[in-house]
Each structure stands twice: as structure tokens, then as C-alpha cells.
Image (cartoon, rainbow, N blue to C red; front, side, top):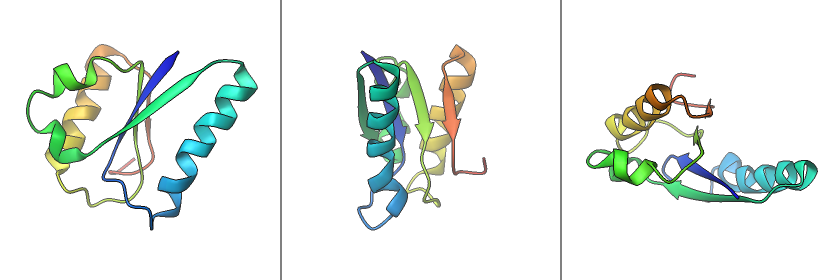
Amino acid sequence: MIRVGLIGDYDVQVKAHVAIPLALEIAANDLGVQVEYEWIATPNLTKDFERKLGKYQALWTVPASPYASMQGALNGIRFARERQLPFLGTCGGF
């Protein structure tokens, strides 16, 4: 099981937010692996983010900035970089 944390503030009106889970499922099926994802609202990463992000094997900063908490998004990005986790940035300046 691969656990992916989706860092961003989910909004059903953002087309990418609807498409990302589908893309993860298609990729997982093609690779023959199981993937589990969870949306992580950026305000939830302003404090105690190390504990909250420690359960993921990969992180993705999703489209639709500005984020509710840019500091929360940056904390997630820094966490991935410092721990050498697979990371995809598709917003937030990437």
C-alpha cells in the first residue's frame, strides 16, 4: 500500500481536485499496486506537521493556490525535501 498525502485545500469546483484521485487510481492499477490518498488542508500543517506527515510514502502539493495557509504548504514541502520523500509539486510555485 502506498499512502499519498495531497497537500492543499480541497475544492470540488477545482477540476484538478476532482481529477487527481482518478489519476492516482489509474496509475496504481497500471502498476499493479494499491494506493491510498488523503487530502491535507494546509492550515492543518502549521503545527505538529512532522507527526501528521510521517505516515505518508509520498506527498503532492496540489493545484489551486493561494492556499489557506502558505506556511502549512511550505512545511509539507520542507518535510518531503528533508526526508527525501517522493514529492510532486503542481502548484505553490512549482
